Structure formats: C-alpha cells, structure tokens
Image 1 (cartoon, rainbow, N blue to C red):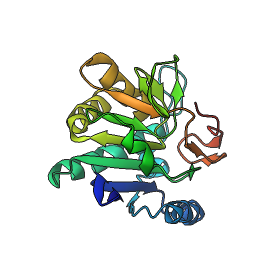
Image 2 (image 1 turned 90 degrees about the vertical axis):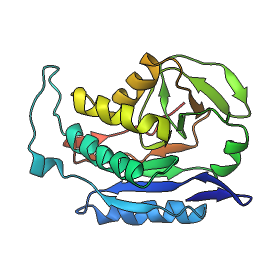
Image 3 (image 1 turned 30 degrees about the vertical axis):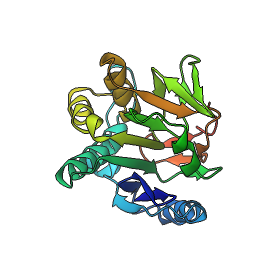
Length: 206
C-alpha cells in the first residue's frame, strides 16, 4: 500500500525480482525504504527456464518471461479486488518521493508512469504531470483496475514486450487516461538483463 497524508494512493505495490539476482533485490529495497514504500516481492518467471527463441523481428523473446510475471500480478490483483497497483522492476531507481505527485494527478487516471520514454511531447496537466498517448518502459508503472483485464488479454494475444502491450491498450481505447511525470522521477540502473542476455541501459527517461 502507498499512503500520503492518511490517504490511500495505491492499494498494493509489487516488485518483480529474479531469485538468482539477490543483489538487485537488495538495492531495490534500499530505494523503497527511502520513501517508506511497502512492496511485495514477486518471484520473476525465469526466461532461461522458459527457453529463448528468435521472433520474426529478430528479437530474443526473453521478454515473455516478464510478460508472464505481469500476468500473474494482474490476475492476483483481480482476485484480491485491488483498485490500483504499482508494478516495479528490480533495476529501479527513484530520485524523489512519488507521493506528492498524486496531488496533481487527475482522479480519472488509468495508467501512471514515474518514468517513461514518450514518443511525442504531450500537454502539461499540473505540476510535473503530463498527459500520455503512447510511452514505453515499465519499470515503475501504476495501473488502475480498469486496465487489469485488458492488459492481461493483450499480453496473451501479442508476442511483444509488456510496455508495448500496455501502450497498445490505452492508445487503442481512447477512453483510457495515461499520465507521467516530466521529468521522470524513476529510471532503470544500467546492467545485465537476464531477459535479453545483454547489458541494457534505460537510464534516460523523459
């Protein structure tokens, strides 16, 4: 749960961590402690155990493991009747307390990024909050219950990374509202990705 001034902002927060990467978990916990953020650690599906393959675009489809982890989280959220959740990846870094930004976030939000890559510049709403129509990266993303089943369906339907699937959902269904902070307050540490079998650097966010 994420609370601020006695108000519940997010019902549940999840951190996805691969069991064989305890050093990433340890650093992530340090990050969350700074802002009194209570997260539940979810053991990630291991891409090695799933098996790697090359899709039609030439990508190693290790991202399927992350997709399966997210599907499990969303199914649990539906089962527990959560109204909103945060999903974090274990290479997360957060530069400032995210809670005050909820004061500027419209009540009708469906998706909220603490850091992302915008494909276009979108209008400022209030403070650091900006409207989003299509953005990528899913290392620090909040979803309302309105998104849970549509995202599950899209993840099962499409053989593409989870962040692209989520963007497809709110971009296709115009009544969904997505927002982000600009500048982003959360980013990903540069490091080796077990999903992509290489060093990944997504430290630059909007």
